[in-house]
Amino acid sequence: MHELSIAASIVEAVTESASAYPGARVKAVRLRVGALASVVEDSLQFCWELATEGSPLAGAALVINKLPVIVHCEACGVDSVLEGVQSFRCPRCGEIAADLRQGRELEIESIELEEPEPAESSDGTPSPVEEHI
Amino acid sequence: MTTRIVELRRGILKKNDELAAGLRERFTAAGVLVLNLVSSPGTGKTAFLELTLRALRAQGARAAALVGDLETDNDARRLAASGAPVRQINTHGICHLDAEMVTKHLEGWEGVALGGLDYLFIENVGNLVCPSSYDLGERIRVVLLSVTEGEDKPLKYPGLFNSADAAVITKVDLAAPCGFDRDLALRNINEIRPGIRIFETSAKTGAGMDQWFAYLAEQARPS
Image (cartoon, rainbow over all chains, first blue to last red; front, side):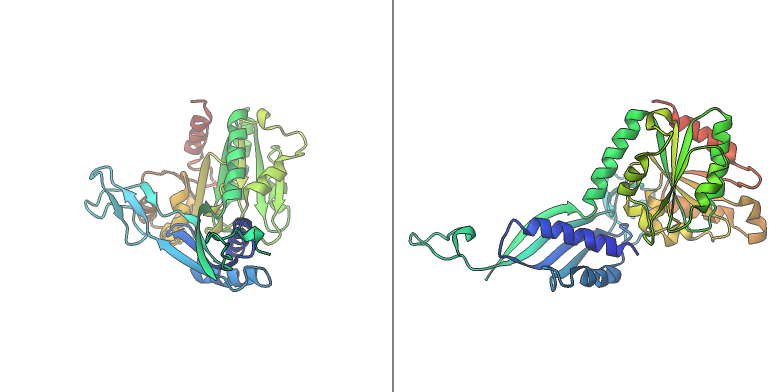
């Protein structure tokens, strides 16, 4: 049940980053969430709605890109994707593989912004948004 | 309208991670070994810690504890009976401790300076899910599992078990009446966190505690 705290952290981070683009509306937020991140997708989606309600982020989609665990096998020297999180063994040789290369991510990958069309200036280059009043 | 994609690639818990990194630096500079104890409610974290604090004090080591719970200071009072300095963190509904709570509770802790400690234990809120995401700046994350909980706990909660540095099986005095399958439990822990140090203990009989104390001493020694 820490998904509400996570959603609130996302709102804070996205609001901060989006403030560099005045006038833009956040359409979508893309996350990278590893299989070992202990985050429940449905719960996070539910909390996202709650956390964004009545804020400038209201209506923004939360897109969760789930990442499987990748382990590095000492014996094979190869990185492999694990199908689940029930056994940390190399799928090629069956040796234990404790060296995690992916799976704990809990990141904001990107945000998608919708911006007003910049006005064309006389020389054909778009005017900066700040001058477009 | 035009669409713009802004790459952020930033950790959602970046603020917590930064605070935790700051804590870790402070702990290292002060030479205090910090352990974060995590388990489900009722595993016996407090009983295990009571015995640990008493034994460390008897050895002349300086140990203190921060203990997290949603409400009540029952655990702090139990632990304080060991004579060690103890401070309760009440989260009032939050299911885990975070680095900010730890930072705040280190401030103004009467009679406790990090530099004057050998060990600081942080007993997390009983929960096998959420604490795995929140770094507290600890050097060692200890996951506890009691024989009454079932051998498949590590398989059910891989996120937390996989993030631990040591595992403690508690209440081994109840293993026989519970029909606890020791080999299966050890195998499951090893499947999720291969090679992890495992201690099999009972706070009631003291079984297995000597190995735990030896591990603490070994980890506290400056490398």
